[in-house]
Structures are given as C-alpha cells and as structure tokens.
Length: 317
Image (cartoon, rainbow, N blue to C red; front, side, top):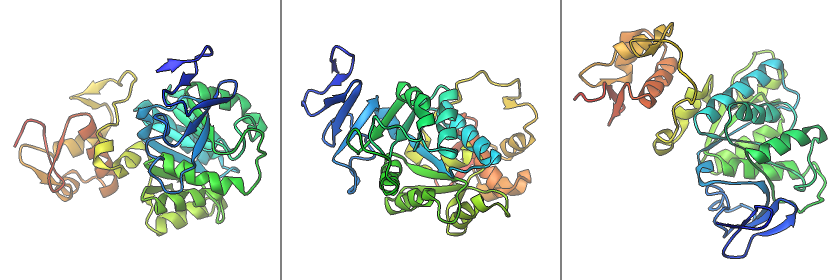
C-alpha cells in the first residue's frame, strides 16, 4: 500500500482523504473499512480514523460497561481484555470512563490491538482525561468515529456510536451495567446484528450489576474468564485464537502445575470419543468449568473435538 509523506496510507481508489494530521477518512467501499462492519445495514458510510485497521481486527470482541464501575468491575474488564488481546483478539470499546477505559488499558498492557469508537469528532476526545489513552490506542490499533471533526460529545451520539461498537465485534461482553446503562444499548445492537451477547456476573446487591444479571436472565452467556468468551465464538473464529504469547508456567505432564481441574478433564478423555456429559461425570468438574477447560485443551492441541461435540486425544480414533 502506498503512503503519503507522513506515512498515512493512500488507497488506490482515491476515496480516503486526510481530514486532519494523521487522520484518514475511510469510505465504506475502501479496503481498510472494517470487515465485520461493512455488511451491516446501519453501518456509517464513512469513518474518520486515527491509527490503523487491519484484516486481523475481524477477530474482535467488544468489552463495555459502566462508567461508575467498581474496583471489581475494573479488575475484571482489564484482565479479560488482556487475556483476549494476548491471544490475538482485538478488543473494541468506547473510550469512556470506567469499564471501557479498563478494557483498552488491559489490551495495551498485553501488547495487543484495541479499537476505540468515539461519540464525538476524531479531534474531540471525551472524557478529556483520556487523551493520552486515546493516543496509545491509536498507536496499537485505531481511534475511529463517524462524526465530523469538531463534533462535541452530545449525549445522543453515544447510543448511535454503540451500533458501531457492536458491528466491529463478533460479540459484546458487558462488565457491570446499571438498569439503564448505555452498555445495554450496545448489547441490544449486538443481538439485533446476530452477534454474541455475554455478561460478567457481579454482586447480587450491586446496583451496577443489575443490568448484567438481567442480560444473563434473558439468555446472555455468563462470562468468568477469556475461555468463556472464546467458547461463544463461531467455530471458525475459535480456531483463529492464538496461544498465549508469554512463557508458560512450570508444567507437569503437559499441564500447568496446580490445575487439578484441567488434569481431571484431560484424564477423562482417552482413546475412545467421549461426550461432554461423560467428561463431566468422569472428572467431577462442574459443567461450565469443564466446557471452558475442554476448549482450552483443544486450543493447546491436547484434545480434539469430533462431530457431535465428542472429544478424543489427538491422533486417536
């Protein structure tokens, strides 16, 4: 791809122009326009982008939530985003205070990619204290918006931008949300677009967990860790999730020392194909935990999934 003197890509079709220094205007027909967003009927005709959007950003998950988040919510969002980013999943969020900022920070901490969608012009960072974070996001992904430069962060813009967050991702994880949280709007868009809707449970008495608990009651997948998120993705995308790019912990028989549940699940899979129900019965591990561990073991190449959700050791019948 050709570049201008500032290093910004110049598309052969001539439809991408520089509106500000380092900012490009992507039309829906441009090659760099986000792959998952392009076919969405309500996708914007153009996007102002600072940073780069890559084809691999199609393997993306949105992590959103309350602005007035608890310490628990911040920790969960940052860890979840870091774990996903470390495995090659692009983390999408809205650069808002609270959960959104934690999600971007987690992805950056892990050295991964992240996309931030604004409810204002590309040159109007809101909240203003996130200007540095926005710059870091642009260096490790992109900041983008459909609104023209100079557009203030009007309240009505944020529900509108939520459709872009949902459209950029294979699924949306909500980490803390009050009854009328804007994050529930993003989850609603995800459901309308046929994307996965997921939620992290919180304290039963916490006001900022009422929205996530309601999502779970309505059928959203319950998320406790990155394995649960990956388990909800379509099979093609699950296989694109990479191994963690850090040195492994000391191992024993190929499994992390101290992970008794993982060893129990692996020992329940042998030469003959077994169902997940068989694995649960033999291992004594709870169903949700067993399913997550089976996915992890499959990604690590220690078990193989056959038709009918049956499992066997690799290289065996």
